[in-house]
Image (cartoon, rainbow, N blue to C red):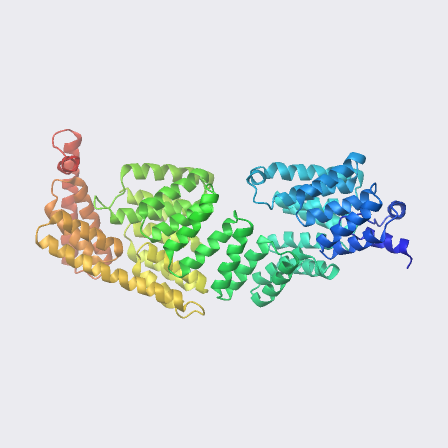
Length: 629
């Protein structure tokens, strides 16, 4: 093959440098004519080949040599600019593309190159670029359209437009653009890689793997294709094969934050947490605003039971990205696990200010309020100001998601905590595990313990992975539902890879039971000594640590009944605690049940009279006066 013919073929098949060979004969002829007129040098041929292999620094040297010989050749300058762009020397790439456009304002390849530079800037940690992402993407799209206006069959322009659509979340249009690029050049490796990423985002793993394999067959140096293939393999649970592909991608492009992130996930799936943390930390070093990497490190800390360390990791990310709701929500959940209830409430409310429709944040907020209601020594119902703020947040969320059962159940839980009667049967029946969790928590807020256990038993039965069981165990432990936490952790102990988490969880359950026992004994002793306020405090603490402890419920109910006769709020809580005791003790004799019903009826009547007297100004609220002192 002579030099000119070889030049035509190499340049025409380049990823970016010299346009496309269309299936139409007139386009082929025009492209060949332009190539012949370019007087392609040996240096340019070699540089084009180096670019195809991903050896951009070596290609730069050859392009500069070629440019010294032919300084007016736009193809060589475009090639140099593209090599700069691929090695992320973006300012230098921009300068070279501008020089081409100064001589020829309609140069399609230069406009396409400008678009690629703009998109590559989005991978920078530069705050200015991050803040102006939408504008940069829009500008890149405009450059692509200018390129296509000059050359509608330019594969690089279609490919780059696909990247634009992908950044905008318009996956259908992105897929079409990548397919257009492939139609224009069936050997365009990058277009197959872009297509694979879109297919992967759409959950079409088999199609994605086929696209990635085609991309690597055309160009073994395509780091994006190896990365995508690694992701696809990892999704299918093939960690060893995924690591191999990801390491190949990393060899070709060392500073890829996404590749390091996927490697971290792969190592974590194998239980190699040291290697996983190292990769996630490398992700953060390259791209500090990678919120997912902070969350993954925190997840590893959480699984080890090191919640404080997990929060520290998340806060280091939040310092850089103060408006990131994913980090803030994770911190709130971990604060709740550490019983920092006020901190959790504040953070959940902050999330809802930014994302008013966030279902998980609403559930977290009402969960925190449920725990506060158990813990507060001023009564079992949440305070008015807490109720009003949470009520407003839930109302906004329901307005945005009117058919969401979990939100309606969260609202029911909140109303139960505020002392209002709620009929859960009219709200709806849970149809999935997420709804069952919300339904069970709403039942707990009404002290319907047996019904809540039925829901949790279904959840434990449905859980068939160590991860799902660990999450359920952690949730039930967080809300102090020790019986169901124990059930989940015992099943977790039988799952591969779940033994360590199960051991930790069961230890925490046993510790909570022992703490409850000690607090209950002390509360009973304080009550016998007539140190009633301290006794109430300790009963509340015992109930907080184990809401299903019937003896703590009964002890608190009797103490409030006997020694707080002038406080309507205390009397109403006494009624609630008697009813909780009844719910937790299903085998009570009929006579005992009858006695309890008479006691609660009498206490409710007295509470109503006291409230009416205070409202009419006839009787002072003694507890309120004591608190004012």
